[in-house]
Length: 251
Image 1 (cartoon, helix red, strand yellow):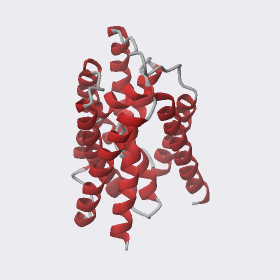
Image 2 (cartoon, rainbow, N blue to C red):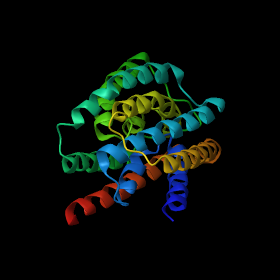
Image 3 (tube, one colour):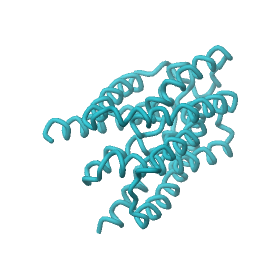
């Protein structure tokens, strides 16, 4: 029963993640925790693998639609990929509960920023300067380390960061989907030596996650406006932070 349940669940979560231009780890990590899987050796490598696959699926869709700012995506992709394993290395020094509380705090902060975003007009492309891209590069270095530490990939931090730097949510989501691909896989490699996989589950959820992310990205590219996308992102973060905080308190 667990195999079809998790396969269907990862499909639904990946649809949402693909629509937001994210890998699925930011939402899959706490949800998989509900099923009692161990965090550091099971959930984190599993989520990071799915994160890379779903981000790649969304990135291909957005790139074909001409929605990606490549001058931002490529440098930030390189920076975040290089620094992500540093976060994985830091993880060994921090207790699991502390990791989860950091995760909750970050989700709440980002939910607030995305619920009240800067004014967005999809009818006009935002002006993105080289100075703005440089700020994004510095931010991506810190984000790559922190995301590798949390085991969720950098997308859930990079997407709202790009919005705060002046991108519309649609442009940020499309560009972010490219940025988070390789960092997710590089962080996954940092876990590979101690990872514990159920290989059938990994294959089933990988296929369903890729399909879900592809459909979610197609849906966003055609039908979802930036303000709506930003608030959907905020609502998802609030739900995740509340769920994880509750488990930390009662557990």
